[in-house]
Image 1: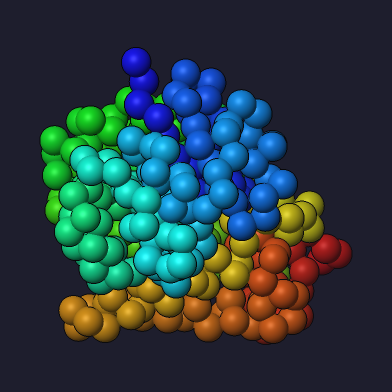
Image 2: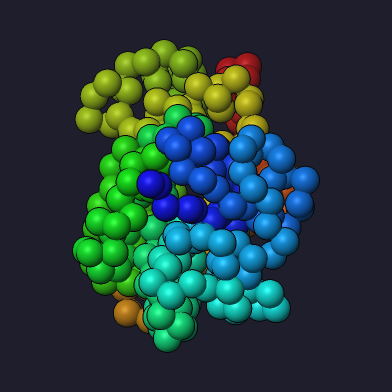
Length: 296
């Protein structure tokens, strides 16, 4: 019989992930800060608190926004630690600080449970389709017990190392993503300013060595002036702050990340944090006075 999965956090990513668990046959007990969202995960049982989730589940998944949110649902009043079953697994699928991850894992293990950090990549569509890339930190034996749960939500599941390694690899992912985004928007602005149709440029380079997820998925949106979020600027900024803090701790230079972080700060100031990360182009447009897809 499938283990009962507790799910805390039914946001843009969490809700479709919980739905995929239900479709795969897992009993799901769910809690969300906005309680009405639990009904959207058709078939999930509603819990009164994170502690109630933990008391009713064999495997507890947390998918919330930031380090402080994970700490609150685990250590706060009526938090997971108050209801955690012996031998339960806590899986944090948020993107948070590796240091906070290691501290929380110690707390969970002191209570007789085990811990996996398992941040994801693939965005909202990957969560909906069950094709997420899942980066796991923890013990191999714990991952093997949780593997059927992960397979209901993702396509690639990689054990990256001990607890905290999943978060470190996710930050590597965000470093590469943000710099690919910068490369894309610089190419688009240069192309526009040089009098060539950006849509033609995208078609010409997308299948060659310059191809990237950003070129294939975001570049055409910029030309169409579509800045609806697949991933919000505010969340990208949160991840880049985490990367810069972690890099400072190990004395690693992240000059490119620092630049993107500053440029996205301009976007946040002028357009808000709820726009998609492709809005990075608007910072460069403000510097050059051109609009990608506009009149040349």
